[in-house]
Length: 115
Image (cartoon, rainbow, N blue to C red):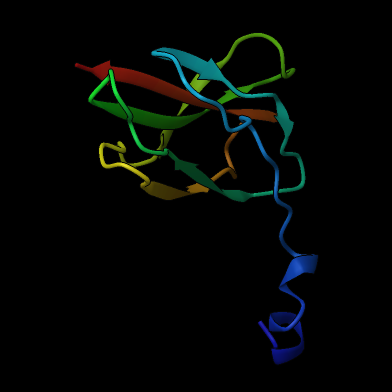
């Protein structure tokens, strides 16, 4: 990558929010479908806040799934799971190769409570 390309990285990066931040309940949350055509890679980033009161702690798992049409046939993308979050106010990310993925992807987050 040339120096001028490094100074204009925004031309090569497109950010998409897949799941809105929320006060969670213990559940699996499916993000919105994202048309990934034209993109051969992505970064899955997930974060959590602090557990307060009851529950005393939680785990948060994040992964990516793929679909041919963005509405049916969702399956996990191999190697597209981020590190499980267990600490308050933590975050993790995973670089994902999408070169063999179907046309649409979505983030899936699973929240489990302890205590």
